[in-house]
Length: 129
Picture 1 (cartoon, rainbow, N blue to C red):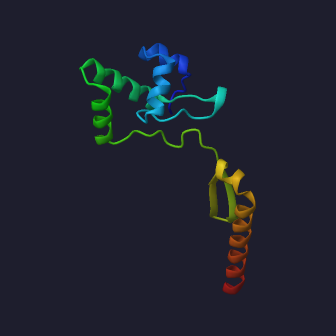
Picture 2: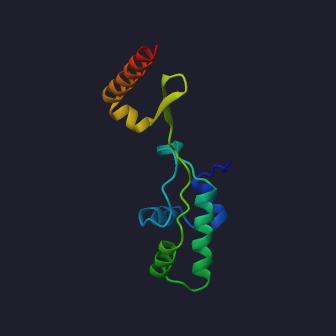
Picture 3: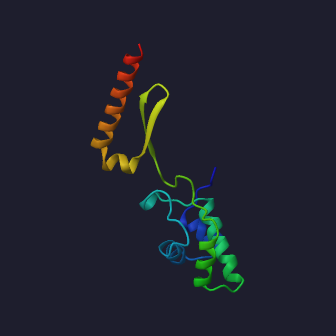
């Protein structure tokens, strides 16, 4: 499991300033933190990417060269960074998982999908009997 870091901890470990870390995020070199606002945090994958950038800089690579290099290597995106999922059980053994941010934005539509799916499963079971 990934360790969680604050931006201050990343700053201390990497030697990059807060401003530089945020710049790399805006530039797409590093994924945004998980969570939001004061509750946001960074994971080992963020730290590793920043350390990789630092290492490339120390080898004399310019930012545009680093960007090109990183675009050619497989991106290390943290799994489900900051994502909270809502589980809807349709029937025993069948469920739908929806990211909370989607759930909040489209709750009425999702509730309707879950209701219809449950109804279809119930009708299918009755037809089998």
